[in-house]
Image 1: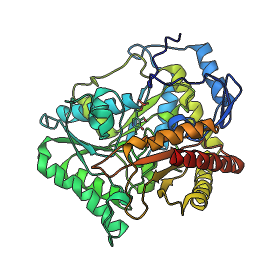
Image 2: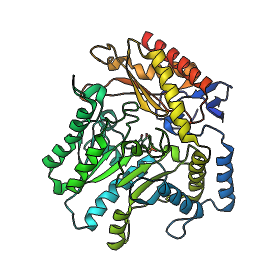
Image 3: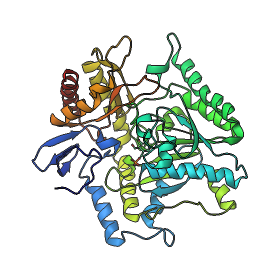
Length: 441
Ligand code: PLP
């Protein structure tokens, strides 16, 4: 009997034996095309020798040194590289072990920044209903994903959620995309005024929404308007790019495509590409100097902050993305994937929306294309598609949930950046097998 505590306690999972490029292989020799990079993690694919060698070399040098005493070369170099390519005035990098830790650090830094400035009332965080920021209790409080939160209330933060920017579900008939983007962003101003601007510390959002609704990009102009509103009221803008960042949408940082820079940015997943657990929180020079000239101490920290072997992996991964010109490849392969999805599912009676950017694509399934009515939750459609696709040899990321009763089932695709055209065809074929089997069940 196994003593592992699996998340799904009734699941009996195959054991992974190896990986090769876009494929994972189990101990029975079955191959799975990694169509979602796990959960948008494995951007370089599996078995990347350069990254493996970089981690090994660092392990031979020194695996761990506590950052209360010593910093390390890979951590310093990784911070420099991330900032060299970062938008706006982002200037400092706080290295952590994953996405939830990055979100926690971001929320605490926003709070401490205001406290250092004497704005002690600013403790309220605004986020969006359609969002996931992590599973630790602070990040979970920030996220707006009801099914993940419902067993844990009351949650910890002073916070509220506004409607997402989600044109498929929220744009009104006849409304232009630009007008919708503006209206959707203006909901933040209304909420700041309702709460009281002097009480709001930050607004937190994913530039392209990942796990709660399958690669939903913002409407044009949405984040520019959000930035204006944040600046008007002295509210910090935290962008969570844990899933959509690190090249996944076709630019190193997803927010570049919306022409905005945040005050605080969270990254993880693709940063280590699965070779080591690593995440990071980036902040502006202004925030850093408020801490530096105030208490001089960020009241936060985990044992594995700045872990040298993890930093070596991050450095090798980001270096590989740049040197191998993988980000332009994300754009071309992303367009190719979208084209194939359109050809195969564009007219499908149960596919309501195909969307996303780069190699970050979502498929929303509906019972009725006209009314956009979702399937009943009891059908467990997304979970069944995941299962059937897996049987066919494809890993894809399912999600179902609800925002004001509007959201249904969707599938998220986030394959490795190295995916070839023939593998895109294989992905779409196997996905079709999964979708048809799921609908029939
Ligand atoms: N933020 C976003 C946008 C995510 O998608 C996730 C994970 O899916 C997290 C935070 C949490 O990251 P982790 O699972 O590494 O803690």
